Image 1 (spheres, rainbow, N blue to C red):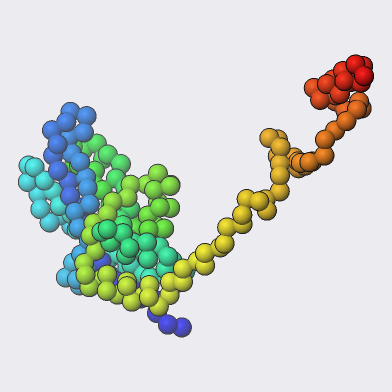
Image 2: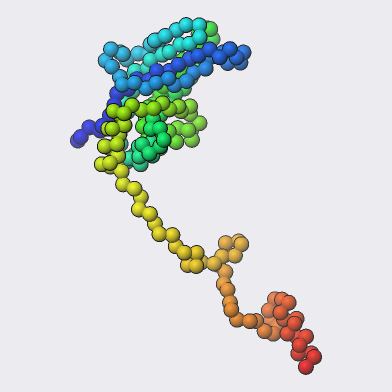
Length: 196
């Protein structure tokens, strides 16, 4: 069994003071970097002052799956190909500490990002570096197969339906005489017969 192409990455989250009485701090995604062994395995603070904090979260593996080649293709053909990061905030510890924003998953697939957003998750993006995009392009070139375009059937071949969705018919024959539903045409024909 062959190993899937993958990249080991670390996520850097940024927390900035926004001087708002309801929310004094705001978290955002700062960067996704290639993971280094010196990063270790535990989150750690990189920077802390009265205006900003930056935290490093190492140990994310971004694998490429053949069945998601379309999601990678959509990312590559966007104006700015990027990393997608799903992150969640810790519960407020109530100790005056700022609750951490922890990355949960990292992906290069538009489909993953779409599923996360549909699930009401927090998803942010940052540009992916050229060396990662080169690997992604090669993977997409090998595995992405565009869906064949289906020829649209002309409307003239569609079955007719009434406004309730029931089958309908069209007749080119003119109805004469009674026995119908009493439409206006029946009355006119009857009037002509009385005059003659």
